[in-house]
Length: 241
Image (cartoon, rainbow, N blue to C red; front, side):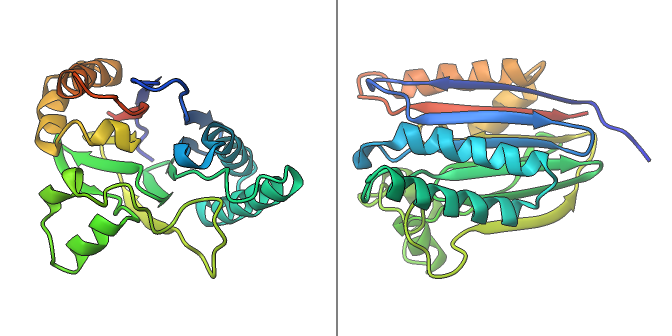
């Protein structure tokens, strides 16, 4: 079977905030690679605790061979228990993104509005669909995709880790084949809000490696966020070559 060279880089910064509530980690074992990124909900008091906890739970579960679906459900169950054990009430919530690469196959799952982007031949192919009010309005045809970034309800999320679910409140994009020209970007909303997809593609075409790609995108983010109280911003860039 054809083997790929997979390289990656990551960054996580607190922006203009006092605490960085984003967290990420990467798993590499003999069976698969997994990339996990979470953005804790700052308005709920313990977002940094939630993001670290869920990333750790996901990495451990995936390392043991569990599916993305089972890993998400077990992390959700463990987070709710942690809330109860620590009398955390309605706090301790986070978004979640997870990408796995196994051989020639990729799969991703997510909860909330942190995103996973997929590029092929430096062209934007698809992304995860936000679990947010603006995304719902796009899906209904009431606003356009370009309106999401600046919508007045941008911060209103429909699904997050740490809220009670009646059923499985996550989405998984099932196995699809990767090539020597596949690239991925996992990022929190503090990252994607300040750079549009066309600039992701432009910088990807110019980038020598994943670290260079992130650096070029960060320059744009810092310029676009100048003069604002920037949110935490985090990302993982992956090249398959």
